[in-house]
Amino acid sequence: MGDCSESETTTMANSTANFGELRRLQRADGPAAVLAIGTANPPNCLSQDEYHEYYFRVTNSAHLADQLKDTLKIICTLTGSERRYIYNTEKMLDAHPEFLDRATPSLEQRLAIVEVAAPELLAAAATKAIAEWGRPAADITHLIAVTNSGAGAPSADVRLAKLLGLRHNVRRTMLHLNGCFAGCSALRLAKDLAENNRGARVLVVCVELMSVAGFRGPDLGEDCINDLIRNTVFGDGAGAVIVGADAVDPAERPLFEMVSAAQAVIPDTEKVLSTELKSYGLDGKVSTKLPGLVGDHVKPCLLDAFGPLGLEVKWNDLFWAVHPGAVAILDKIDRVLHLDPGKLTASRTVAREYGNMLSATIIFVLDEQRRRMQEEEGQWAEWGAMVAFGPGFTMETMALHATSHLKMN
Image (tube, rainbow, N blue to C red):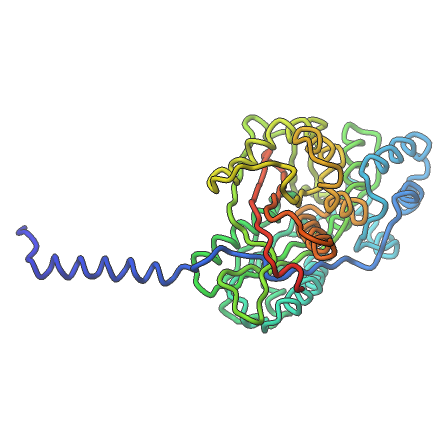
């Protein structure tokens, strides 16, 4: 074969230059930002102080109360929660006695309930976010949906798109069974989509219905404590965030710029925390080693997110949005980073008021942090850190930059 002619070489060079220009034009000019936030919960609310009585009553296990009541009370106290919102009702549990016994298959029935309930709860949260955003739902270009409570396809994302009236060609991504860090993962993915697709507007939604997917009665087997923890820690809820770059004035007002993100899997920790679907519903393991693991690795994981920015990071100069997986984990982060009192108040408030809603929790924390910053007098921290963790053992971190629009919303 002969060499390319001069004209062919010029044509190829021009094509490469044109392609490079096209790619430049396809990307956003500025960083992705949180443009709006919405949250929603089911109407049923449980008091942690009264939960032990409720639990043994609805699970028809009063005969085990003497053996397990004190343990359940201790777990309720350690959660740091005062109340949680749940989807299930005593009437629903009466209609599904199979939910209470791990020896009886119940996954199909649980998923059938979640299939209907999850899109509706997502729509409640997303509608709030879209109203705050101020643009039509049809302007959403991408949809990222997250849940640990359901499975199957088409999933909650398709049904949600129909409920909201999203365009038929909205680009969808569905994340199942990623655990508590999945909300942060979805926001990281939304950041990449918004920054690499000029004009993209990404709706991130997370929904968890653990009261349906994982609720069951106690037993005295080896998984007894895990069952009590799962039934005591988790609440139900949905969160929605709209993410986009290059905000359009005056309709859009960015809240938090999403500047840098990182994820790390801590080596040899695969068995520390798990989430999986079994014939009797959602199950998993929780190790008491979690606070120690977070404490040992939170600094290097944070530096993975902040290092590329070239900033001299002082932890007490940041605002914080941390997934409150357990109060003991928040306490550990406080001690390891030597944080001033109140730095993790947003996380502790969400833990107290809602419990752990897995992937949706970080959106509630971000919303609570936004509310607190809007109400603060004077200046607030300009830079912040978002942190979540889950099975793997995985840690997600993101560097956030607060905008002046916070005070205008």
